[in-house]
Length: 454
Image (cartoon, rainbow, N blue to C red; front, side, top):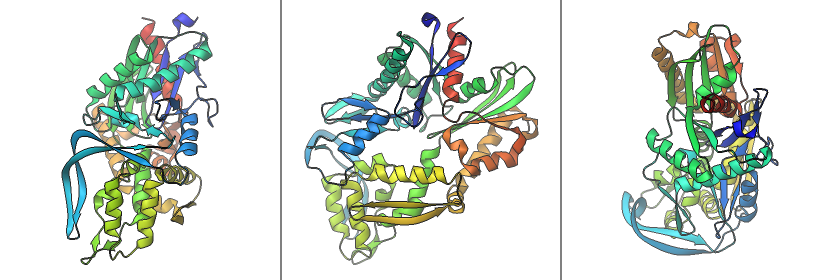
């Protein structure tokens, strides 16, 4: 049996899953992260220590929290790489000079702590991000992703009892940042590093369509709505032929919404809106641009930024916020801040409001975020999503009333405002919810069997 098996892998911005089709022609979603809340769903994270040992999924998060995010500063050693990079730095009390060319400096933490790598998928299409520096060792991004895919493959192979070398990997219609071919090339290299010999790709919404409509015999036109952590992908498919009428994508996802919550509701606790100096200037916007996710916050942890905070203390209107900013950056608290945002966002799917509580050294946030406020925050995104749906309908040359069913998947599809938008456009009776986190992998497994059985 095993020789006929091929994998379907959904390598996601936030979560990853793997599946195969058994002898009864049923998708089997493999439990590759047994200690996770859902063992079939493995968080797309890697924890690397200074010896370059790696942990993946839930153990990676647990290790990071234990080793690094302990609300205490660690000693650092400065290394100059010899390269020059473009950054924004404070110039003097009179203003701020953006895009200054400075030597690239790497800070190596002298504790036993490591780094947590997340959202790797979002950087696959970036020509700027070609290597990831791991404690002074530059590794190509495809090598790093390859280590994650290798771990997925090894765990799956152990469950099945044999090494499987054929795979269909999902891809978004549009990768974050564009340059889709570069991202595909890197993913192919990563899959080879993982040990796969035969590698194919399929659009993630098409995979979701296979999972939704594999047994459909009657004629219908379905819109597949795949909204994950990094991207929104929409496909329109005619069944039972599985004829693809349109594929469109929008490079926003649940992580983007988390950023908006931070910017709108939390950034003021870290100096947004405060003034400093004789001229009562605002803190540089580049600081808050570097807070759109927890990983970028970690990159602020430099001697230069520490000096900048001292600079901003002069006649500052909110010195408490500056202390919080320093603690956020230098005590490795960005991950915790954003984990709490994610929890609040999820709970707002079933509640009208949720408390956001975060207490650490020099940080005390106790606030309430309502569903109404959240929906106002993402209103512009909802407009863009509606335009993307219309773009798909136009590409398929059909009207919204001609859609017979809307199959949703991806964690962000569970957001009530998203459901309401689809309901208003197509009608509640047409919306069919698939498994939000594993349907793409199941559909990829169906495609893998179809492709490799030819």
